[in-house]
Image (cartoon, rainbow, N blue to C red; front, top):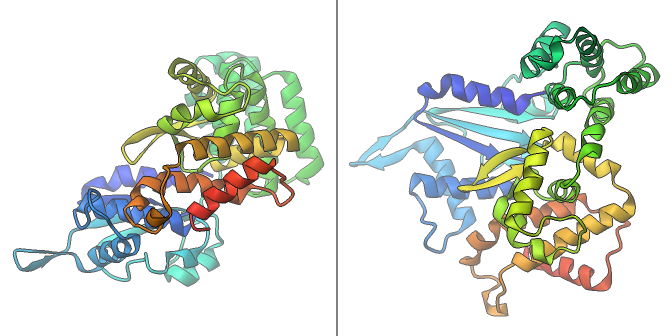
Length: 379
């Protein structure tokens, strides 16, 4: 529904009010710890060139939010904005939430308002889908040339109304229009899905049905891919906040997945195909460029994989992460010097742990490698 985009728009509109703005991925506590560690480095209250403790960084950053910093024997409080994005469980914010201080906090979440309000003590705002007129205006702005055709305009208007004003679905629809893939058959499929499952409501609900509606639009984009299917599948099993380009490039030689780009030129071509289809976006994490797919698109991609395909992609991800995992002696395993080195890779290991189905049966060697990754990550 555009929760993160709305928060980002707020940041750009009100940036002048704050001396510091912090954007924190809040899907789980591991990401919260990682974000607070990076904030500690940015604020200069911890040094990434020295051994550091994630729990100590968490405490220092929270104290900075609440009590400011000491400068020339005076306590200085600066105006700050803290965004907790994609919060799944409000209780995860225990220990991270500043109870006082000179700033504002913005939270985006799929949790119900009562659940969120009971933790935050504030009133949230439900982000609603676009209305019919706004949805059509948004779609027209994305496809100003293609939608001039009256036939295409009529088809796009019908599909946009059925999609219920989801900005993500409209963005995917614009890619279909630009690639001349919006045809009467697709309109018929969307309409049939609506009639069979939406019970005449003016908009689909915001859970399972919206995902199914999005799949009808996204699947033709996926079917049109020529060189990037394997890259897309891998991205959708790794960390939802994005995967750095260097991870996908340096580990490609270890992957057994057919169609996975194995050199810089092949990777850039595959990446460009996904960007042009609006299936992924570029991100920058820890000063590294990377790619990410929206959580709903990730879910669509995973649901359309057959069990054998999912296993092949999962095995490739395990091979890639193990290839990059720094080797260490037993004596080094509990040394906190290794936390910074492993932090990025641990996010992807955790993602594999979360998406792996119970019935997944890996070959013996791969199961050992996955177990070793989990053991090294202390899960």
